[in-house]
Length: 225
Image (cartoon, rainbow, N blue to C red; front, side, top):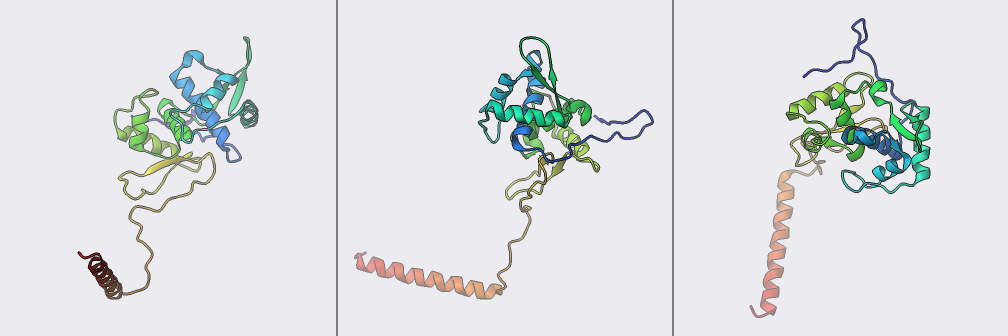
């Protein structure tokens, strides 16, 4: 399936990104708002108490956090200044809603991917698909990758592919809203050379093995073996 965001004259509509990097609590708040909107729409928008509980949830969170009301409220105030969340007045308590569908032009697949990246950090396409079932059903990993490619395209990209880590077949993807993402060494990155010829290293290893063999023989002799 193909998704695109265009204006009436056919031009691609850019995302309105925040002017600064978001901190960890702000990212957790946005992730929780999106998650609860997708998974339990009947209880959405969220009161601040429900949002605190979601932020401190032990499952489906990496890392697990322990934030209080003042931290969450300050994060909401800053996000409101960025026009990423807003208050929903009425009823007994003030509730909070995110504004990312409009500001970042997110359809449901894109929102699910961003939700998971916000809540659990960098992940492979396979991990994203495996963890998305309760939010959206991606038929194949290719569908996930296509969504990631859309989100990672252009000057207003909000995700980026990272090099494969040693032992992994898939590359991981990370969101860019928290600033620059530290890249880990690629899987095929060669270790730094010591500058010694291979023959010299082999001879040294052989000498070490011979020394260890001699010491083991002496030890067995002392023990009467």
